Image (cartoon, rainbow, N blue to C red; front, side, top):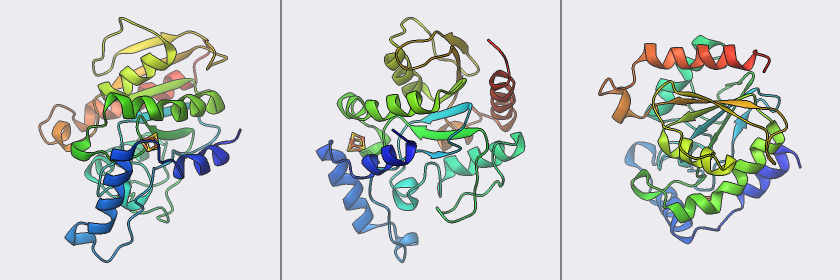
Length: 226
Ligand code: SF4
């Protein structure tokens, strides 16, 4: 299976009734500032370089961010913090991410999420995340990354569940080796970062410097022989 085929499947998914209802309602009602735009209103597939050595896993689409634009972290405050950092680190050709046609190209990186549909209050239920997990598993199998960067604890817990690893603790900058399994042929590194949500960036819990260090580390690890 290719990423293209997988993404076509993801976009049509209606496995979670609560999320299908929410994502479509948000797309219909819209936020005032975006009332002239056509919302995506569907599951948001991953995007980036199919040959990526670095896979980034986020939480889930924002109601008026990627549920509007159809691309992860695009058109919201989290993306406004993430893409400038990726640009500084050389993973993105530009710092701006406003729409699917804004010319953004990722190099050596693929960005995906634990859940593909915008959840009410940004909180997918455990059952909804379980429903969505097979898509993430298949992305990992296809991409075979050398590094997975987990943005936030929910993404970290999901990756641990996929690799059936217990007892690892989430903290910003934590780094763990993961051994080959049914999903990955080669060992890989799991690197943790706080999520670049406003809750973290406006409070100073996640600073630009702290975030830049994550991407420098990811780059080093991707080039490292294990
Ligand atoms: S969250 Fe995932 S499993 Fe649930 S409807 Fe969306 S794409 Fe499907």
